[in-house]
Amino acid sequence: MKPSQLRFSALFAVLLSAVLLNTAAHAETVGSVDTAFKLIGPDHKVVVEAYDDPKVNGVTCYVSRAKTGGISGGLGLAEDKAEASIACRQVGPISFTGPLKQQEEVFNQSLSILFKKLRIVRMVDQKRSALVYLTYSDKLIDGSPKNSVTAVPVDHGTPIPLK
Image (cartoon, rainbow, N blue to C red; front, side, top):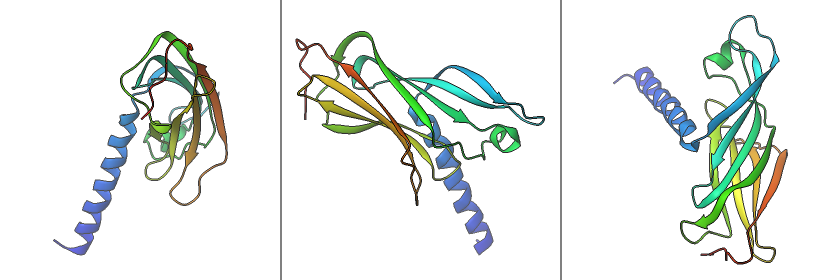
């Protein structure tokens, strides 16, 4: 195989991995609003997505974030802004599928074709019987300090199992 073919194959593998990882977050789109009209391609928008915590039944996190439109956004090549807001709520009886780590990344979603991700981390506040969720974005080289935090109280009669 020629070096140029090898480079192309490697780039294709990286891009395919990025696309597959982007679907790993299991987000469900709740809705969106347009923020800027684009003549060609989709408009810029703010999307609201729901994420069910995979280890805590009865908790859903709602994340709003910017989604870039235009030609590059329509092709999935645009880099979305590192701004997001989160609100997690009890949507049913809280139960745990097993012990939780004190701090654990529970979701991530790619915001660009290669290196930028939106991350959601769950932290356990045992003293106050609460689950704290933090959202932020990072890049391979330089992340963003922009973040948002929310907490879900857990009834004191339901102990939070820790690892």
